[in-house]
Image 1: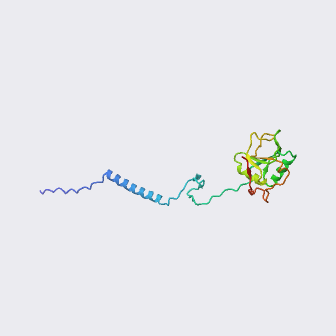
Image 2 (image 1 turned 30 degrees about the vertical axis):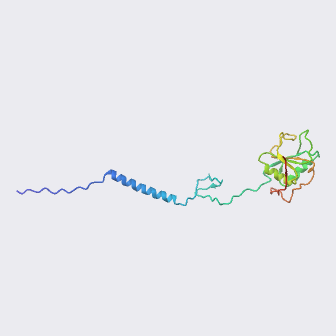
Image 3 (image 1 turned 45 degrees about the vertical axis):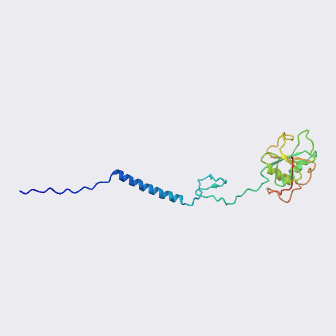
Length: 205
């Protein structure tokens, strides 16, 4: 009786270890991440921002938009409708403050109802234009429409008018005898919200 030879055993293939497979995945992820980051940085370096993001120059950046530092900026023109004026009669000539009020209104200025100076206030020979903080440019504009040869200074305290206040106005004209019941010397054909032509103004102190 013949004996059967045991069959030869096939060599088994070794399975890859879990650690080696994990390391390979990590390397692939690292390479992909590097490539994506390089593409993002290669977009030209344009400055972008979300809605409402303000650039240091004051320009609002739209989504995905860019800011051009060389772009020209614009400023709004000065408007004579952006402030209110109070005229007070310091000339002693009856009706002169009302007359000045009407003439300024005809030129497009917003002027409150005329009033007198406070009791005991000395008459003025020279008209004065006085301003509250923030209305410096407006005072120069008003001085120009009056002809330029007026006193311009900060608002005196207490305010020398019969009510002690100028209400919503930021400009006070203390009308002197020099301009009482006289035409507006600085009128050069503008009005109704236009920009006034600047003339030489005497500034107090």
